[in-house]
Length: 382
View 1 (cartoon, rainbow, N blue to C red):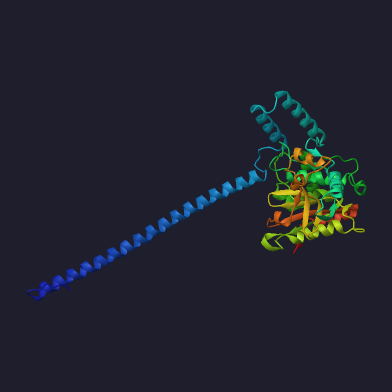
View 2: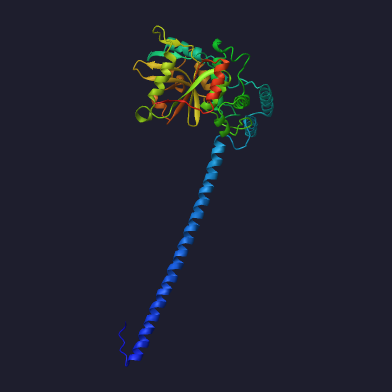
């Protein structure tokens, strides 16, 4: 046990006992130390977990608020409040005269009271101008199919950043209102302003359309800056007895994240009534609502080039009137069409959804579709 030499047995025994006591004391201390180390480690782990959960909870809260802001559900008001706020900013920066502010405020209040869009962001006559252009120029185009007449609507100070879905609905409706096939469904209707569209969607929900979508938006759109997408556009059109369907191009079907199946689908939609082989075909088909993450646009036609590539013709509600009006000139420059023409390489979002109109519904068909919308399903490609 140690190197000590003892004079007799008793001293040796006492010395050995001391060694044994010391050893057992040390073991006891080690156990106490070990136990307190374990407790400390446990406490540290608990503290770490608590901090992590608190941080996760804070981040989730921030993400949720960001999403609420992004999708217009943060109780910061809707179209009217944003329009007034942005006009006040324009006045403060000297970009709008106070008298102009009061005139535009009065116009807006009148538009909201009657529920009809004031037409200030509308550009008409573009489809006719495109028809002329393709007849007389565009030598690299073999065929082009154009939808029925469509007015372009762009976002205003009141819906900048969130109104694209509503503006695309206005474009689609502008086409249907000029098409005799929809007279019965849309009798006496004008292009509604955005708050009116919001109330029309709420009415469709109250009728029983798309309860899941309604609950996701708290059954409320009026007075919010809530975004709408393909499902809300389908719901609203169906409630108006317009026959349409959603097609979900849920993943890329070509190289480098492209969507050739989307382009083929749109070509088939427009060229199904092809007669003869003219270069320019003015179809009787309404435009197509096109949605991807964060934005939506309106497809008004498709080109087939001489090199066999396909290009969509797209109205974007983010494009201001001054740009769209360049297309109304007698001699359109090809560069002005750049904002409309989109190749396969320009459409590389992960997923696209379209809403395509196919005619009118009978009252019985509308009831059947309302029932079917209890569980929303879209045709998926592929």
